[in-house]
Image (cartoon, helix red, strand yellow):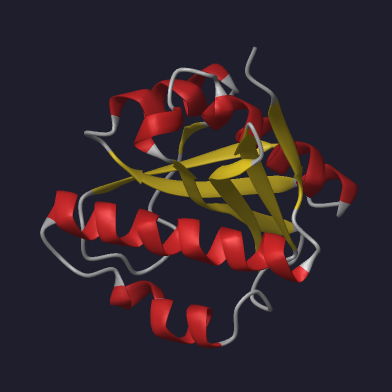
Length: 155
C-alpha cells in the first residue's frame, strides 16, 4: 500500500526537495510553452529561495518527494498559489488537488483574503483542479506576455 503525505516544508532537506521539484516544473513548462518564464523573475526567486514564499508544501509518495506548491505574497491581503507540480510518475494519486487544498488552508492561516494563480489554458488537468476548488477567471493581474489563464479564489 502506498504511503502518501503532504506537509509544510520547513526542514532544509524539505526545502531543497521543493526547490528541485520547482526546477523540474520550470523545465517542463518552458519545454511545453517553448519559451522562458524569466519574465516572472525566476532568477531572483531561485537565488533567494525560499524567501520569496510565505510557505511551501511538499508531497511524498513512499517517502520520495513527488510534488510541491508555494504560497507567495502578492499585495495587501492577496497571495498567489505558485509552481504547483506533481512528478509524472506520481500522478493519479490526487496530489495536485491535495497540494492546492493545503495551499488554500495556508493562505487562510496567513489571513489572506484572496488567492491568485495563472496557468496555461492547455493544462487541462490543472485547470480542472482549480475550477473544482472554486477558482474563477479574473482579468490579467500582472505583466505576462503569454496567453495565460488568470484565476482567483476569495477566501
